[in-house]
Image (cartoon, rainbow, N blue to C red; front, side):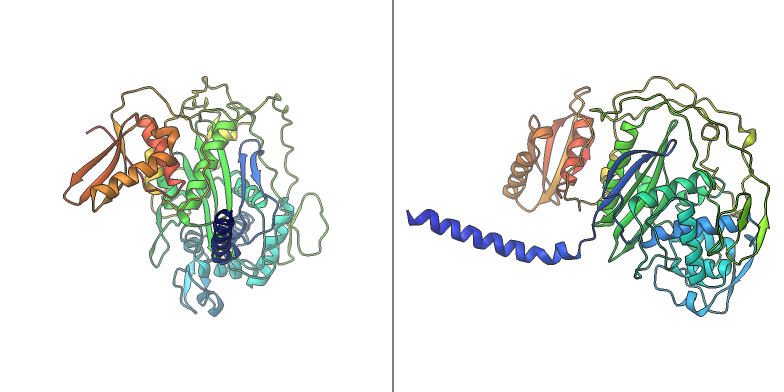
Length: 485
């Protein structure tokens, strides 16, 4: 009778020790929040803790750049303006471009550095060039956020480094990402460049892994601080559909990218094929303490520039109500939309001296109505490059794909290389128990090579191999799909 009591006491002691050991990890973990929307209509497709105020980190620079683009459009400053670098800007913490106090650099290069490299010194220099000081620029950013409907956002700086009161939400940053795309389509291509010249050096995009791995991804902005975790606002377009997904509080770059890829997949699956494009209304920036006056735009300096009242937007009939449900498969093959009249598109400003990619804004998005595409294809074969470029630092398993049984079973997956055959066989058995859903009918095979013993599952279809790897990576198990040799 005493034996069960002893075993129970030992188990409770072990469990308490594990929880105590894990407490520092949980204490330092940034809260997780997410939001997915259909960019065409603004419809929310998924949200979790979307209104929780968190540290945005370098997602802040989306608003920094939005305000700069707005100032250029109003004639307050130009792309060719030579900006004097202050000591404060030069002293900002990395990531940075490496600007020297007292030097001058064209505004266009500061924009590139902030958008692509997420350079903190460039962001501060942009704020000082527009408003005279970073503090004044941060207040202008906050006013722009309120005008945009970002009711839970307050900015204290232009770069996003942790500061008391500098907070935003997944919902607000998703809103900002949508405004960047629709309000400044001529500049949006900056966010999709894998690298660009920033005057004093060539800089690489902090989001280049997701841009390269996820089909249709073309932006927008990454962010990381210890307090914030790994944040990302991502946008992707497939056919006539565009999805924006936001993640706050990622555990690592790989975890964040993998989670965003899953959310984008979810968005493309849930979004209707046909929907009227309803662009967000442009916010009107007012001076501090000024009341809203129709037809007047007030700059941060207090100078008033009277502008003509804008033409009324055409009234669009609301889209037909329809039931949206998560399908078993993810729609991958989407029909192209008949191009609308492209003559209304504005000419792109000359941001980059070298040849720049075409702006992401297409004629179909400029049109108020979307033409009827061909029927949706209900089966998706995801690119294996996504799983291969994402590290295996994921804890929670979220899978929205379905295994296909079509095709020959000539694929395999590798789950590691080991020093002995026994270790390889042990790994195969453990993995099979973890992932019964996809590996139940696979054959376990140990292959000896010069480097050791390869642990492989063979006899899989291409879709099954890819799905198995995605699910194993989500459980922190190494996996590599292998095609027919």
